[in-house]
Amino acid sequence: MGAFYWITGILLGIAIGLGLALRIIVTLVMKSNDIGDSCGTSTDFGRGVTILEKKNGISSTKKLEKQLDSGRALLNIRRDTVGLPRK
Amino acid sequence: MTNQIKCPGCGWTLEYDPALKKFCCIFCDTAYSIAELRSMRGEEPVNTAFAGKADGEGRTDAPAAGAAGTTPARNIQRDRMAMPEEGIRKVRGTIPMNVLTCRSCGAELLMNHVEASSFCAYCGQATIASERIEDWLEPDTIIPFEVTKDEAERIIRDRLNEGYFIPEGIKNFKTDRLRGIYIPYWLFDIYCADNQGWYYKSGKYAYYAHRVADCELRNFTTEASARFNDEYSIKLEPFNTSRRVKFHEAYLSGFYSDRFDVNDKEAEAIAVNRAEKLFNDEVGATVPGSRHKLKYSGLKPEILHEEYSMLPVWFLTFRYEDSPYTILVNGQTRKMVGAVPYVKKKAASLFAIMAAVFCPILAVVFSYLNYLMGRIWAMNDDSDIPAYYIAIIVLLFGWTWVAAIRKYKQMKKSIGLTCATSTNRFVKERQDH
Image 1 (spheres, rainbow over the protein chains, first blue to last red):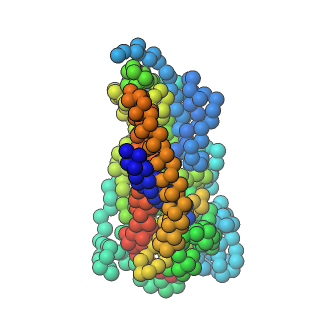
Image 2 (tube, rainbow over the protein chains, first blue to last red):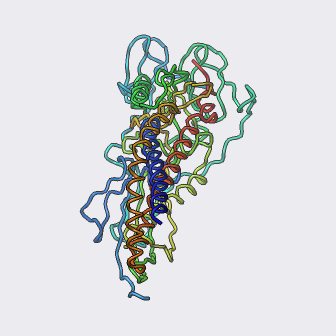
Image 3 (tube, rainbow over the protein chains, first blue to last red):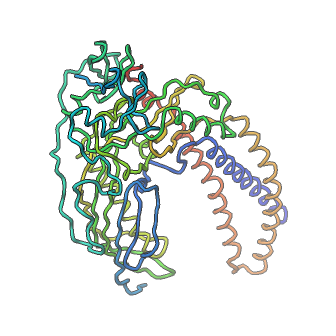
C-alpha cells in the first residue's frame, strides 16, 4: 500500500509540475509576444464603455472607470426586496 | 469626381499633420488651422469642437437618475439611406474598384467601392472622393489622427524589441506598408431600463432577488466596415470620443479612409446585443452569490441617438517567413493590437528548466501528502479530509493544464488574427503613393 501512495504521489507531482511549468511559460510568451490587449476577446462587450457611477445604495460615491474615457454609462440600480429563504 | 485641399501659397495639396493639429503644405512649409481653412474656402465658421460635451451636439440629456422605466425621447434625425448603386468595374481581379481622375495631374486613380480618400500613384497628392462623401451620407464627426506615422512605427518597434520570445527577424522587421486609415464607426446612445428577477443560491438555501435598474450608455461604438475584422476593431477600442470634432473632408487629406458598408440598422442590432449583455452583467454583479441566474427580464434597449463617425487607425504590415503580419495602432490612444510568433527553442528550454525544478519537488510533496491521507483514511474512514484533498488536486489540474491550454489557444488565435490575409488585403489593396 505504501508503494501505491509513493507511485501516485510521484505521478501527480510530475503531472502538476509539467502543468505548472506550461502555464508559466505560456503566460510569459503571451506577455512577450501578444503586443495587444491580451485579455481582449470578441465577446468582451464592456470595452469602450465607462461606468461613471452607480447610485441608490450601490457604490454611490465610488467612481468606477472601467476603461479610458471613451464613452459614458450612467447606471442606476435600486435594490428591492429579497425573497424569503426557501428550501 | 475627386477633390484636393490646395495650399493657397503654392497650389500643392495640404495634408493633416497630427503633431501640429494643422493642415500643412510640405512644399512651402505653411500650416493652416481648420478655421483658417474654412474661411479660405468661403465656408461658414462653425464650432467644430465637442470638447466638454461628451454627449455631442443637439442631443437630449440623460434621463433623470433613478427614473427606471421612464424613456427619454428618441432623437434620431437621420433617415436611413440605402447604399448607392454605382458602375463598379472589377480591377486586379480581387475587389471591385472604381477609376477616378486625379485633379492635379489627370492620372487614373483606383479606389475600391468603399474608399473615401486615397493618394494619386503618379503625383502622390492626397485625394478625397468628395462626391462619395456627399452622396453616401457625410459623417457627423471625426477623431483626427493624434499619432504621426513615425511615432506609430516607433512604438511598434519599441514594443517588439522588449519581447524576450520574439524572433530577431521580427524585431528588425522591414516595414512593408504603414497606412493611416479612418475606419467608419456608428456611435450610439442606448437607454436600458428593466425590472429583473434573479435566482441565486447561498449555502443550502435558494433566493429570489429583485432589481430595478436603468442605464444610459453613451457613445457606444460599433464598427461599420464589413471588410475590417470585428475582433480587431473591438481590441482597438476604446477611443476617447469626447475629443471628436465636427466632420470636415479636409481631415481625410493625407490619410486613407473608408465609408460605412454596415448600415445603421445592422449596427444597431449589434450595439443593442452588446448593451443588453453589459447591462445584465452590471445588474447581475449586484446579486449576491457566485451562482446566480436571470429568471425574468423584459429588457428592450432603446437607441436614443446615433452618429456616423470616422476613427483613426494605423496599419503596419511586414513579412516574416513568407507570411504577412499586420499590427494596428489606435491613431488616438496609441493602443497596439497584434501578436507575433515566438522562438520555440527559447520557450522549450525554459519549459524544460522549470519542469526539472517543479516536478521533483511536487513529486516529493504529493507522495508525502498521499501517505498522510492514507493514514487519515485508515484511522477514520468517515473523515472528509481525503475528499477535500482530491478536490484540491482536481482544482490544481484545472489551474495548471486547463488554464495553460486556454491561454495557448488564445495566443494562437491572436497570432492567426495578426497574419490573417484578409486584414493584410484590407491595407494592401489601396493606391500606393
